[in-house]
Image (cartoon, rainbow, N blue to C red; front, side, top):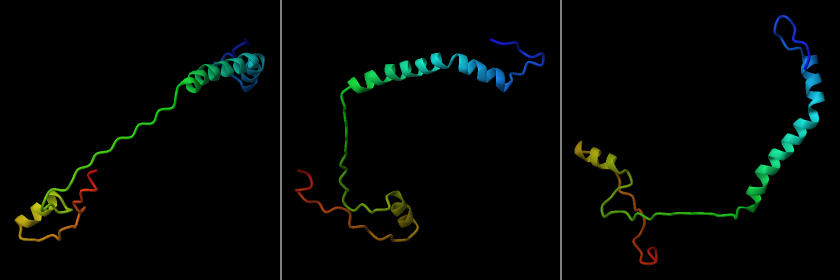
Length: 92
């Protein structure tokens, strides 16, 4: 490479000269790595997965969950939410 100064610091001039001398190898390595990563990415078929879960509301359940039960213990009444209507079309 070059001579290292006595104080173990690398000058920008030394760094630039190494990059210029090895520039072809750096560019070639970059393109080879990109090609190695690109080939499997393009050959793999696209796959999309979606999942869903339906949880119908229980009778008498409020929209506040456990907070409604806790409030009722202390004499407070929270409003009930309408929720989803139980329709047979919903489950088909």
